[in-house]
Image 1 (cartoon, rainbow, N blue to C red):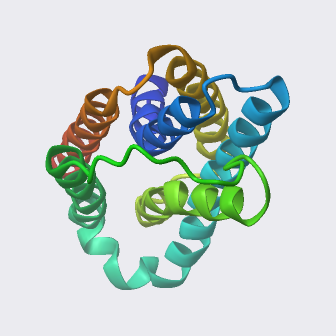
Image 2 (cartoon, rainbow, N blue to C red; image 1 turned 180 degrees about the horizontal axis):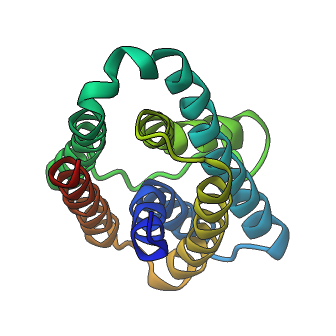
Length: 188
């Protein structure tokens, strides 16, 4: 897989993390370096681990769906991309309240890290179905997510309430995944 495609996948996957990091920055208003690093590290770590988990799962089913590998990868990426587009367009309930606890600590951070990285598992599954290694892509996905999460927290702290920005980031990420999935399906 060309690095540009892998990078585009990594950026698209990081859009959920960016949206959460942006909202966290808005709530924190003044994020300390430790808060920013905790969130970026947790999100990057889970974003790197989930493709590996999906890839391992895919090894078990790859032989059954090998003939349809390109279209299976497209279906998985289209599902994830479509979900991101739907959530971005639909938007959320505007809520002026922020969580009472620090979202960069404890169970709340764990839940956010897992929730924003579930989509990466489907991408790892598609790597497995296509017979591609997951190790380098997992590192790239994790590093890109780390950087984008850190930027999201910083921008959120500076920007105030910018709900439209996080919605459009999700839509852009979803469209990118759909395009990559279609490219894979048509090439295979």
